[in-house]
Length: 358
Image (cartoon, rainbow, N blue to C red; front, side, top):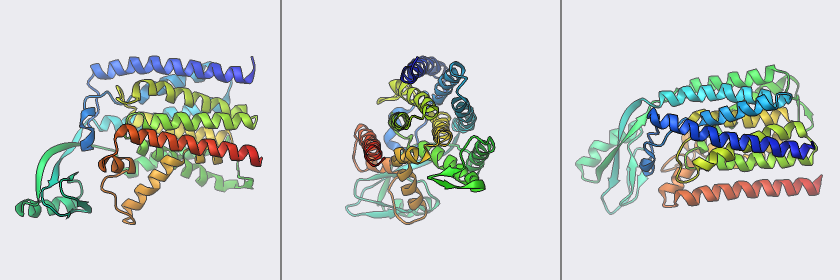
């Protein structure tokens, strides 16, 4: 069987098994009432949608690894995915507990007003999320500048510090295997490859996790980016890199069958952590990390914009950026299509440039 036939078979097995596992897991989660509790007002209609669907991806990945156990890169990638998925699963389980109820207010004046760090235009709504906003609310209500239009339950989450520590451990584990090349972009990094791997692990997991905020957004982007990495690896004659990315493409596309708008299941942190960790692991082990990072540019840029917002360099009415676009009136379907298109364009241009220059 040729290399291309092997890749096609690996994709088909992963794609079909992920569809089956997603259907199976969705039924169990729905019966157990393990469902989403959106914190974004515009996503109230998603309440009751089964979450933690990333479990189906982990099952599909495990099946693929068992079939292609001779591929060391794939086995290690799946082990990292399983480990990261468990970390995400813990956060999903914690998210079943409501931490607080936040009020939603609307500007009922004819001019813009400030509440916390937000500027509300006439008629605009927002959650009273920050401590500063909560302090401002009583005065604004007394002056009849805003009205309370509803309440939103906010789920409990792991502390950011704990998540980062877990991600650092995953990066250390990957680096400690000795399977990652110490050469990056032609330069010998030596022992400094360890912080590079750790930084890559943290960046990839958080990029995928942050972008997973709309139906099909993360799964679609990972399908396109992973598929592009398969093509890039095959152009290089690098089958060792192509196999894990083929499995990731099959996982993402198989899950997208049920996760596309309107989603009947959500991957949760279980899925986003696993996909982010698996993607960067495949990039490092296959020595195609530079192209993998470029292909994931849209989620990475989204993280950078959010960090700028948190550092008070810029101000977003809602974080992250795709929620701001939704807040400003762009529909969820159009935002997802825009992000998919940009990812596809970036991957296509990068592949063409590589072909012509090398």
